[in-house]
Length: 72
Image 1 (cartoon, one colour):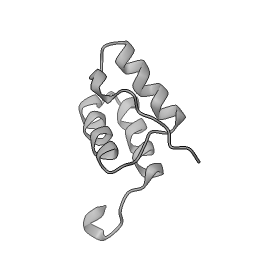
Image 2: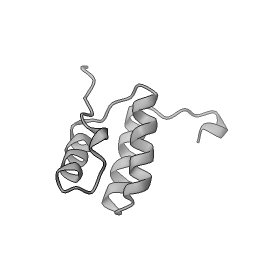
Image 3: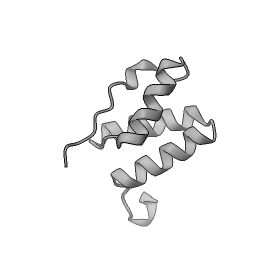
């Protein structure tokens, strides 16, 4: 996506992360969560809930918490 000159935004990150989580591709989700946070983007409410649920179940590294929603 970025190679074609189109930078991801908050909506893009959240949509792709949710897809990875729903398809049980947690390592890919984890990589994208880290990238999203590094670039200054935050999870929306539903993505944050999914991440929190995975952390609670011990399926995701707790260092990805908290993922705060930006105030709008």
